[in-house]
Amino acid sequence: MKNSIRFKLIIWITGTLFVILSTSSFFLYKEKKEQEYEHYQKSIISLQKQLEISLLNGFWQLDSKYINAVIKSNMQNEYIVAISAKDQGNLYVGILKAKDGSLVELQPDFQPDHSDSLTIDFTHEDLAIGVVEIFFTDHPFLKRIEAFLLTLLLIEFVTIFTIGSILFFAMNRYIFTPINSLEFALAKANNLDFESNDESIDYDLPTSDYLEWNALVDRVNAIINKIIQELHNRQFAEIDALLEKNNAETAYNELVKTKNSLVQTEKMAALGRLVAGIAHEINTPIGIALTVASQLNGETTKLNKKVNENALKKSDLDNYMELANESSHLILSNAQRASELIQSFKQIAVDQSSQIKREFFLCDYLKEVLHSLNPKIKITPIDVDFDCTEVIAMNSYPGALSQVITNLILNAIIHAYEDQQAGTIKIRVTAVDKNVEIKVKDDGMGIDETTLGKIFDPFFTTKQGKGGTGLGLNIVFNIVTQTLNGRISVNSEIDQGTCFTINIPTELKDKSSAERENTTFK
Image (tube, rainbow, N blue to C red; front, top):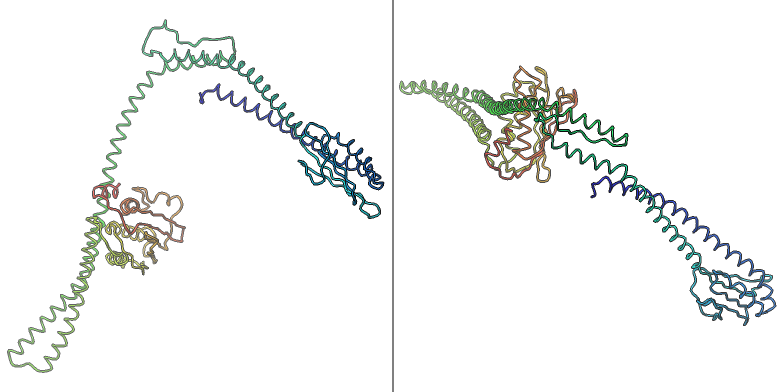
């Protein structure tokens, strides 16, 4: 019923009439009230002037009968409830209008029910000779206003009912009856058998005496005929569309498989770059230790020969001890350096390959990640400024975080700077409540607005054919938002650099291994 056009039109018409008539009634009521109130005020002013003139002589002559007669003559005023008059002596006249309209004596200390009061002081040459107090009521004009309002409401109701009834019957005759006929005819047309070749069946809608109705019927009949003519073409088009849909779904599935394969390849390539960098970095301390050990072995052989030949001198022993001391120090320091690199590589490699959730200290772990990237960084004129002074304990996936930081730094080295362009990549880590905020900011060439909105899209790269796969930042986005349950945003200005802001929780809820893999490479 509420969705019926007939119901809504009745409500709108009735509501419009109600608003119009209510507005008109309101202004009429307001005008009437102002008129009555003005008449009430004028009566008070007129009575004041009259009594000031007529009662002055009565007070001066102490004529109580005269005063009583004047008061009674004014008690006919419908707004007056009571009047009392008294002088400075024993003269007192008080008259009260009872509820039945009769006049009774007003006691000196009695205060009748009233809405307004007026006190008139009578003086002669600055000498007070009497006081008159008048009590008024506004009930008469309020009753008239109330009666006027009821009359307006009755007129409004009758008008709304009359006009509404006329409009209802008119709409029912000229609008809704034809609509009902159209509904019946369309219900009949709904049973069209488009595959039937029986030309004796007539599905045309009926005409009527109204021009508007006939125009509508003609257009509906034309639509029905057009539907019959084009149905077979549409059926063939639907078959073709279904085939195209199946082909598109097949292509999409292949694309998803290709993407997942490329993501896994990218992950393994990052691990491979890590292995190559660490191998290159370890080569230096191992080579030094091997060279020094070889030299020490040679000197030991010489010393042993001199001992066997009884040709050993104190100076020879002193020189050997000095060489042995220096060599052992070099071997130990370079072996420790190699051990540190191997331990760092083992932890980061295990984290990146296994995606195990564990507890770790964020700053120390990020230092290890940057240390593993040092072979890649030091061959460029780019410095990495790492700022993390707080002790932040994490319970998350360090391997996923390592991949994020690695991808962001390598992305900055590749895309933010031209060949051999110097620059600084700043990494700032701060604790925010139960989260941690990591900012990775470079001072490179920046990203324009058009490209900025696409950098997290899969397969989007500005280095197509130059080693860019278009998956690095897409992997970063998926890891941060899904694996690490955080947020990532980016701000950039041309020639001002780019800043990635990562916000992740320090305590991550447990997630199954299969679910984590699905979200990481989504």
